[in-house]
Figure 1 (cartoon, helix red, strand yellow):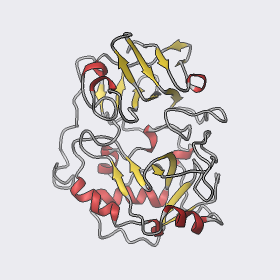
Figure 2 (cartoon, rainbow, N blue to C red):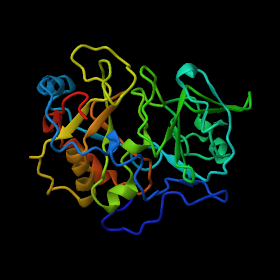
Figure 3 (cartoon, helix red, strand yellow):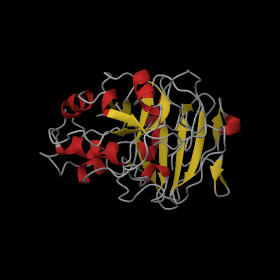
Figure 4 (cartoon, helix red, strand yellow):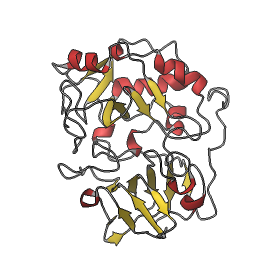
Length: 313
């Protein structure tokens, strides 16, 4: 495992830029989406939902949290590219009618050649995506400030084309939502990257945005989500936001863990997909110290959280 961030703050990035200017795990050093976007919304004083206790009981009051990220191949990687990166047409095989072909008059996604042959560019670690898992591919055009996200991305060498289950493009300067009923590369219809726990942010100080979380079952959706992926009675809807109770004592944790947990108190956790209960999604990065994070996360249970009023803004 890598050393603790507090012991080695000058650890180099997980992956250096390649010769084409593609950067894996790039530190953009700026906020994703405007300051008043739902991902960046301070919910410290948001009201608690009347069904909060019932929702938490459904998830499990003794259920421990888990960091769904770490060194390769754990977590979701992301890459930054320049505005000149060529666009490639993607064949959408599942949700074509709810997917974006491109952005700002251009067709295609700026998928670099390295994604075909290098590991840990697509979620799951397999070069070209492989055939198993969610295989998210997240790309930021750093010049035009656009976010391209694909679900179930795969390079089909036989047909010489990129394929994906679904895809969405987000203008990182805008608060526009997906059309009602539409998915994205995530079940809730939300962007994925702005909700990841990213190493560079957690190293600098308290993370200043909400985090992406999964639960085993969901029931419909509420703002800011746009898509449902379940109808289980008693379950949280997509887009619901959990908040770590302000009374939770964080002083016993490492600085890195505190920086993550303070985001849970100030910005909360947004339910974005079905999966394991209370799994918090983060970026793949060789510098994560799961020897520190795993026990820290598991010490927090469902009873340490409350659900803010559904759809509150």
